[in-house]
Length: 321
Image 1 (cartoon, one colour):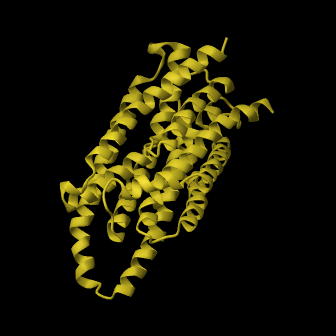
Image 2: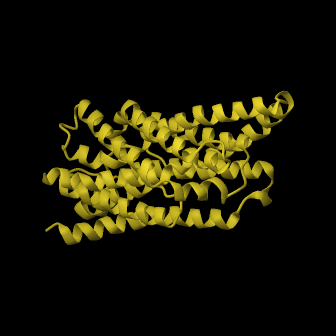
Image 3: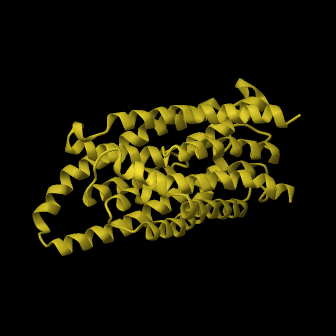
């Protein structure tokens, strides 16, 4: 029972990912009234869980920045990020769950082994990837808008056919995006508990599958219960989106997550989406982009891992003798 109680912090983090990052998947579709909100969250819950089971286990064995993880430290390493994500979700800001989670794990590594005991080289590699994700998503979205946009306008004249294409595209690409979210981000929910041996020996494969299923269920629950607020921010307050540009944004975001999953690096779904939406805006002209909103979001990203690490260090100092 004590182990289950400690695991709740990881499930809380997974809930925050589902609640916050659902906007990255169907926020644009809901904002353009192409898909109903209830339909969107149901699809997110199902496909995020499937993605977690299918592709999530591959990330678990490399999710460690120091040795000696215990269940108590795993609880603290996920509670700090969970609180950070919860605060940013309440403020309706897209948060970087992966950065918050890595900040929490790094905080525990620093508290346990000192500055020299943490794996700074791995953190540096992952940080470089984090910086490239929004840039890559923006570039893909910009190119798709410039190359495919004119083709759609030229060859699809029937408005009813066009609406059918858009609706079908939203569903297919949205499900793909939910699948990549579950596959890439599930490791940050139960990864520390996997390293601590809660699900079995970390050297085996099946404990990672069990950890992925548990984490995927928590992400699905977050999408089902508290996803509406951040959808408004991503879907309508960065730049105005029509159905085609919304589909481009979701696909660009999902592609970046899928590529990162195959490199076994958990990345920010929020950063990929905001980069993609910004790329759409740039393709229409720089004045269509809400620079103030982007600045606020970027500021939240910078603070996320730092706040998460400090919270984890503070809780470890208070709770661990």
